[in-house]
Image (cartoon, rainbow, N blue to C red; front, side, top):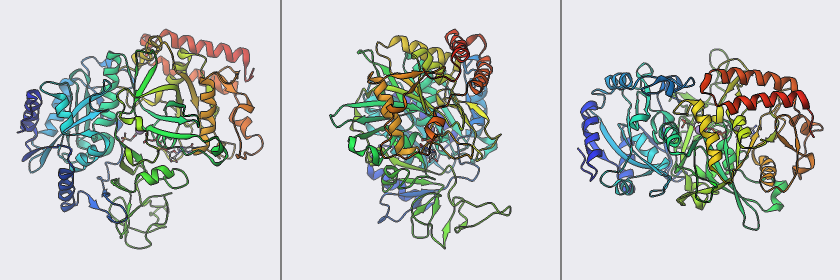
Length: 600
Ligand code: GTP
Ligand code: SPV
Ligand code: MN
């Protein structure tokens, strides 16, 4: 048993231990000594593998089970007393059924194992933004990841004192059997139960489970916002820094944009980029009437494949020490590699993410290339490792947000950038966001999946109420951030990206900030404001003739079809959908009718 000064915490741990029956219970204090001891122990059982400590100091390697490599949305549930409170976009189970079904899997599942008690904070300890949690887990891998991703240990217990409120998070690997896997959220009890998985977002319960699903429920009640957004600051040579929060769906470029390096052509302007967050933003209206944001996390859990010195040099720098690599290729010399990474993999002796011998050029029985790293392989790295990490990370009330940006992956339709007419229209733009499936994903190519505010898998309550909440937040602000939509992924007829993306995206952010400061005028279109061609700085960027025109083309026919798709999506929510959003849809149709594809 554990004996902290928080009697409620002690009692809960005892109750969970009675169910799971671990051999031992160990309290995590956040010290380097205890971490080093746990690393040793996990190495001795091959749960993790020590990498070459000269080349990659403090770095370790881990493989998950082959059927446990990504979040399992179909096994993720919101357990509220009323089904309607989970809404039409979530899987629902009653709390009774959730506790019963998961309880059966948890029962006795930690026999022969140790239960670790991990007190953690999402946000700087002591900040009014911050929420606290305690995760119980039988996985050292989870402990080591939580130590990087969150603030862990004694300062958290100190802050909780004798009776502080915390989210009760229980995780057990059990048999890591997909048939016996459940990720359950009980927002009414401030509780999360996750069993049968060992993968990232399913088991690092501070991340998607607490900081988005549970937090969005709390934020709704307490009038703040918990969002799937990056936060970055753009500093001008005169010292002024403006902060932008941006929501893109999973694998649509948040980490890359948050770590942006200014392109050659804009170097003379002397911008400096500050990375505040790459996945989650918690935002509140402060006494000044402005919107302020923190990143509740303390680390990155980033996609490895595609990360290299050209696309994301800051990320390459970030993962050079104190990083855990999951499901990448392991070289025989104790280094790692992934597809579209730097350098070459070992010609002989490497093992792939499944632990099988692997060499470059291997094909499966159908002639398809076998990848060394899993496409969703990840790095877990401390935030402070990032060369552009912001010193504002530890500030208790975060950074003031000037602009909110929504974006998806759309081969057609959405222009490179447009601005909403006002807050309510901006909420409509976010609520109707969509991303197209790529050939690499299961499902019909080009098919649009609506992913409002990039929160489809993460909103812990009825999404219609979430839209209403966004509208209400706008009223609460005396100074509203301007709302924009971007699309880095528009393609030409041959399927090539029209926009070079990555660092060049700063050219678009520059326009966004100019608009926030009323520094430039814009053209009105049916869908929102777009830049005058001369207002995007193209210095040093050669684009094929006509490419910019294509990037800003507005096809009224295609947008009318889009409006029909939106109507169908809105239909899911019935009467619960805010009338203001229905009115926005009708206003869009009217403008399409009047303006067509014109820019005035
Ligand atoms: P999660 O961690 O899953 O939430 O993903 P994320 O939103 O942080 O996405 P990430 O930055 O890891 O990028 C995902 C993929 O998009 C990678 O393959 C990138 O190479 C690609 N990508 C990112 N930015 C751009 C861009 O501006 N243009 C293009 N064409 N591709 C991009
Ligand atoms: C995402 O899928 O949006 C991620 C990875 O950031 S995970 O933490 O697994 O959710
Ligand atoms: Mn994410």
